[in-house]
Image (cartoon, rainbow, N blue to C red; front, side):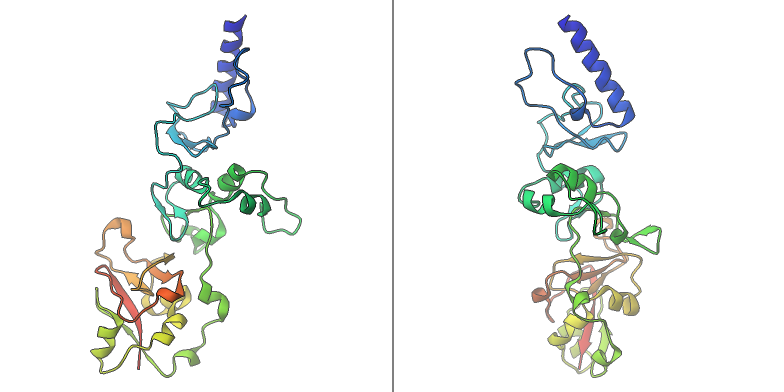
Length: 273
């Protein structure tokens, strides 16, 4: 009878995998093993990879179909392919795993977050439900209606551009300065000095917006939050692929803005006077 029970459990789990259902909600362990708490919920979104609710990522071929869990021989809470400054990843499964790290997502934050923006929307019931929901594509990761703002479009925590919330850009804000696009790898101090002017640090916060970067630098689709003293800036077209050539970058930490910052693969938008 025990063998029959195991066979039935395996059959149910295989059916669950083929139907894309979370295995941890469907099956029970054979008699005598109920005390082993190893049942997992998992994403089961794609045909190859999945993440379980413990923060492990594995392929469907090595998934334990009885427990719904990935093997523990991989790194837990892996952020492979993730930009930690923007909290966005290039794959759904690693986004979920990274999000599940208690250092990045607290239970308190997850349980008080609403599933949608509607006032009557329910809140998430678990950290796993929060992460698996947040990491799906959302309107904030899309530009021009059907194009992603970045390859890293699975985001578990969207950081707004802080300077966008302060005030909208007005032409009067830059009436008294010259906007100079520096050469590749050039600081704003150097770019402004080349025109016989000085970089105005106080004006960098005005330029630290996607709308300004799009207007003056013609960003190629992407405009993402980053961390660096060389921002606001645009990544040059000859940059390595993982740096997203053509993308514009604004700093998510305004205190990092500086006139002397530079990066070998960016061109800065500089306020000179």
